[in-house]
Image (cartoon, rainbow, N blue to C red; front, side, top):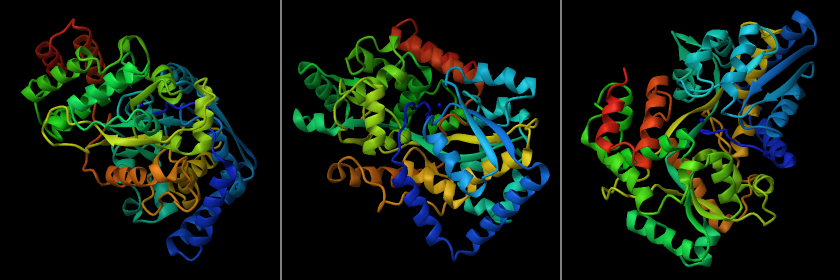
Length: 464
């Protein structure tokens, strides 16, 4: 909800680093036939846009990743499409649906807009009807074999009633924790691999005036991430099967997972008052300001390994400290099964073109550039905000310099490699709007003690 979530504010990327990486990509791809096809398509699209209406003024609505990164995408796009002026209009993740719905209905002021998988915020299942079909444009841009060149999730999760309604920009993975490695080293704390070690780590940090693990349990989407991770720890893949109607929510695994969810609160792993705060901004700010040593976040958090990005986000969290070494770890084996390292993913966001766009061709040009061009996707990769959907693109580690390479390079690269190798395991993409709400309500009820695990599982099973 990045997001997955988006979830992300006050991003700052070193422009020279990103543009150098893109320049390197351009040079390296000059002799590629597929890239030449894409470049030719890009030039043709640009000419078509210019011939159709000259200069274009577009408004791009969304919630992630936010300013100034989105403006940097626009600036790089304008190097190839100088006559297309795009204004980025940002809302919060929680306000997006309420803001975009009347704007789309009005038919003006929205040319390009972000959507997500499933029925969560910005869900393509909800807003896809207001978007044009993108399949023909994508085929013209990448060729008839375009499906082989893109992450499967970028196509499947954005298809509504047989029509491709948006182009995925990048995938986002969840199901792991991030830790402040510097705090772990300072207090000689063992990185937790099971429930007992997790509790012991939290107790040690608490004794030193630091929150061990922080979660904004007042924001339901992240509770769903934690619950999904617990379910995969017990029996990998069963959660996804249940969302597809291939398993019953009354299965004892889901009751056990709710028991373990409640145990996180009862045993003090969840911080005091967790149900009263949001993941963004409160939990995020506590972690980035060094008040907490661990947080439940996904692959979108990788961007905070970049010193300038982290410095900006720390400043937004009211911290004047220097960036620290944060690293990803597996969700601890709290069920004692040995099933660890599983993550789940969705397209974090995709770019849709409004049926009422003032210049459909120019808006389509931007969606294709961001989600299917080597240049746009290299920017996505090197920002470490998302995993690119174009399979030929990956972070250029020669240009990506982390805050503490000695502590971070190996775990971060291994994490991203492992994430992309995980089997089909959607995050929110297979969850209906009704199940989404029911699950958030059940997890809050079980955590607060107003609902038993058995009753909670029964409520999930009652959703049609």
